[in-house]
Length: 255
Image 1 (tube, helix red, strand yellow):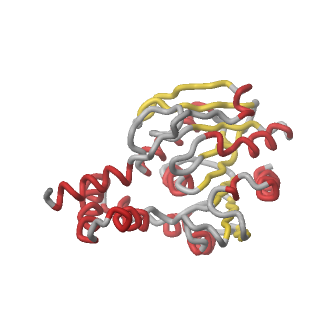
Image 2 (cartoon, rainbow, N blue to C red; image 1 turned 45 degrees about the horizontal axis):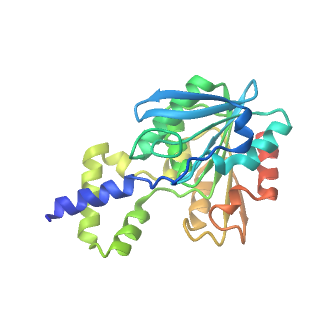
Image 3 (cartoon, rainbow, N blue to C red; image 1 turned 180 degrees about the vertical axis):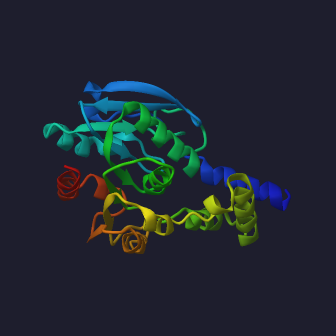
């Protein structure tokens, strides 16, 4: 296999999430309106619970809307509307790949059709994807980033290390990606684009997160004007999005 073939195979793997064996639905969303909305990445499954300005919930890589069950329930009890979606290639949505640009386009389409959107809450990969959407015109009053990376570059090397793939292949895969999406997008850094954001931001991260190092949150908070950084410990990468105390803090912020 040539270098380009190996690089393209790695690029495809990096952009292709593994689907769960069974699709899930957050318990509170069983009472919500469901939608299939056309986007550049295919039909995207989305739900709206409640009337009026809503909180948009954006899950992370290889996750789905069910991550937000506790948060949606807490918001619903206060009469705050919620919009949730499954990103491309995840859950109930169409697609095989989920690129940051495709995810951002899906987020913008959902916001445009199921708005008004007042605030957005994101987890992990949902943070950079939503930040691209904000830089492309998504207008929100407040944004919450939970366990958000600055970008995805380290993940390429992690996958390569697991597969025994050389760094030459990784570098070539990144060159091919830049040719596909443009140099600026290939070098995407949330901490860099956050410097121009106007929305108020709450950035939360657990110090023991073994998927996304906590210093990502520090860099994002340092760059995002007027943002608030909350660090905790013992909640790892995913549990932090469902912890009762964290949910209370998020609800207080968006409400």
